Length: 252
Image 1 (cartoon, rainbow, N blue to C red):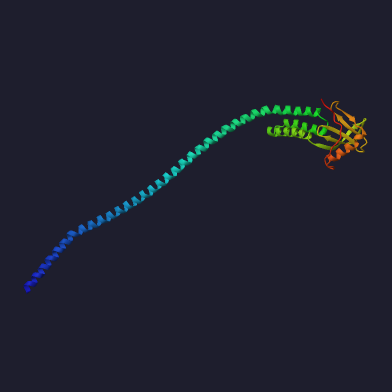
Image 2 (cartoon, helix red, strand yellow):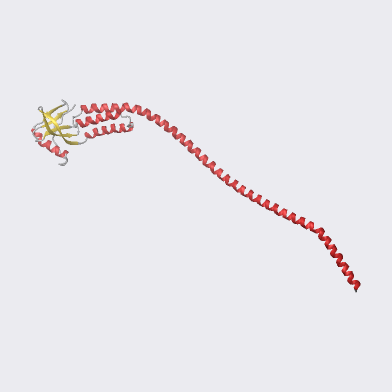
């Protein structure tokens, strides 16, 4: 029995010695494996970081590509707008050149129109002489002004022509001073379009009519007094329109 125990003890000691030798052999291997695992973990971490950076850069690249595509579309649109603006500038410059030509042509035309209007007024029935003469004088002064556009000048000339046209379709009563037998008298004038121009003194004692053929004032018979008075009241809108018996010069 003692011998068996001794054998067991010897076996245990041998096994312990063998295990100690195995530990000495395995420990470097385990330590090396741990180092490899640690290095692998660090490498994996680096790989993960690189992968994240690549993903981030890829996302940035995609975003930049979209921005570039958007900018290309925007630039293409801008090019079209610039081309249109250049065309508009060319058209505008051409229009300006045409306006300059038209302005050079229309100015002499307006001067001729004013001269023609002045001659017409001089030959017309002499009603509102001062007012009409002033209108023509104002137009001549307007033509000399550099701060007024040609369009405004033309509008004013046409406006003057329109006023003269309206005179032929209306009747009017207005006050004025008229020389009768060498004396200035306060009278009322009655204008019936351009057909007749008649005056009557305030006391209705005298009446006269403008003779277009002789271009002279002629005294009217007192038999026209009532008709002239009626016509004056109609022109002042004090009476409703009615038939008037007035002397009218016969023209060829």
